[in-house]
Image (cartoon, rainbow, N blue to C red):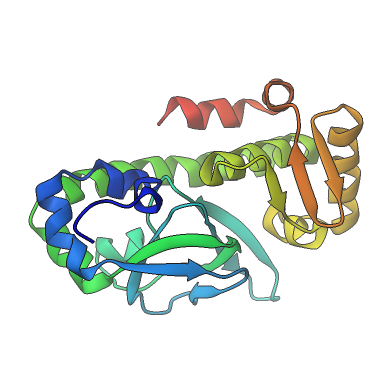
Length: 230
């Protein structure tokens, strides 16, 4: 990979590297197909690779003792998975699964750690991303505790779209319910509200955002707060 490919340029971190720093990492970069529901890390499991999605979407899930799971973070073309492993313990606090399949790249964690330790561009980019990601997790927690399911669903759909650059998302109600930590019937009602208002079209696991400005005006303050922090 002597030059940055169009797919690689979709990832903001990789695209922001200077040619010199990119060339140092290029021999280690592997192009990967991220498959739907593929588990990249188990909760508290080792991080062997860091993934840089191009048009894929990775969900970070926390599992409770009763087996229920809830999404606590989203990683798309804005970032890199495995960021927590750079903070000391080389494990993932959450389970990481591929929510929207597509392409991306990966680097061995050892390569990322070594480059991070140089204190150069990659370290600066990853620290800035870690700050944005922590804000995302905190805002999501506040949103889940304070806003309606319709508002939470609209915020979540906008966040997904931002990270895959696509108006249409293949997401079942069961999966969305799991991500939002609520019941499928509740998601069904919320999706119907958004569809009736003309913001989305939903049919058999396909959600298409047809009125993004309207959806943005409908959603809660949390979405704009996250955009303002970027």
